[in-house]
Image (tube, rainbow, N blue to C red; front, side, top):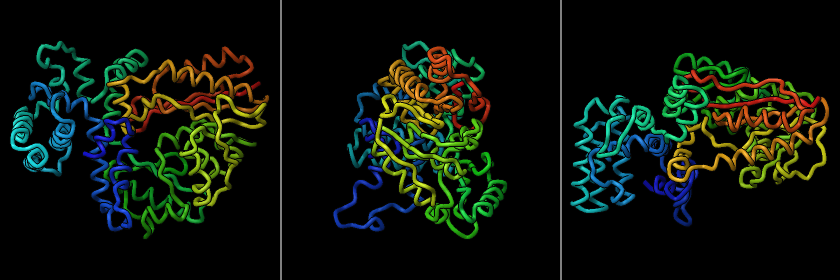
Amino acid sequence: MHALLLTDAGLSAQEALSAALDGDRRPGSSERETALPPQERHLCSELVYGVLRAEIRIAYLLSRVLPRPDRLPSLLLHILELAVYALLFQERVPDHAAVHGAVEQAQRLFGPSLARVANGALRSIQRFGAAVGRPEFYGESAGSAACDAWDGLCRYYGLPRRIADIWLAAYGEENARLLMRRSSLRPWTGLRINARHAFASDLRAALLALAEKECGQAVGLWGVAFAPGALPAEALGRSLEQWRRSGALSFQSAASQLALEELGLSRWQGKIWDACAGFGGKSAVLLERGADVALSTDRSWSRLRHLPSMCRQLRLPVPAVCLTDAARPPLSGWNGHILLDAPCSGLGVLARRPDIRKRFGSAPADLAQLAHLQRGLLNSLGGLLQPGRELAYITCTLNPAENEQAVARLLRARPELTLLRQWQTPHAHPWLEGMYGAVLRRV
């Protein structure tokens, strides 16, 4: 509940969970004394991410059984959301336990009157029965508000209509439905094996065997992804955390790994500048493959400062690190390739970043401003390329205005550049996150 309240205040799900789980230690207490056990931390994370993914769907259900849910205290609404999430999605939690737990919390925090409201609302949702599992149920009118089938589908998948309409206009109804479904599911966990590590081949073989036995898939040359709940606790007699600390393993989304491979960036010869490096995940991938990442920059030091220690843990060369805005870099030229993992709307990673829905739902993100930023970054970095060198443009969104159209604008503005290849996550893929990438060369 604390984490959900923090997301109301504007924090991302990851930031809110970090603050709720790790930010309240008593002075002088150790992490061991105050931290929840790993299983409880995982459950807390599932509840927060799950409620945020299904928030629109849950809000609709509550609007069907309460006259003015918006007048209830925020904390009580979150109690109800957690209970409804359990009723809809948590098979291991008995329905009576979900209802009882919520009513008990409402009683403790708000007294008997609001506890009765909570009990009545949850019992009424239970009486809907199996209907709540069908998309058609969410197309029915609530009160006097008119509703069409597309609105109902948006509610069912917990998606602001503004996002669904972007996909509908860009990709057609069939693909839009596929993307809506994918965005509502729990994401898979991606693991990346450090190709330079002494046990890389053995660890990869062991993880692939576990993936085949459980529910997982290979991702490119050195990645493995596992379905929700299928992540193994250990491999080759060591926990995944031990492998991570030894520099053999990293957690990285499968789509991020695959995008770099599909675009052929690990085959780049010569120096590479990672211009929006963030925490440095893509720099690390390229370094593990033997690429010469000479410079990693970002305008956020809170992210970039982690890159050197991560490289040292992975036993990789540490690139030069510089705090700078790639739209106005302190360089007159760059005799190498450039990787631009650009800031974007994140519409391809809604399953992993469900808090993005809040920005589109209550205070819509300014897509025009994002497009302006991307245009500035592409134009600035494209102008620094030397003949024969390449610029890779990557986003984690599915929005032509930020992807194909952004590249087309750059090619019109800089005719010395030519498009070599483009790649996008297939719409029909059941779980892979939505990524886009393009590689351009200066002729």
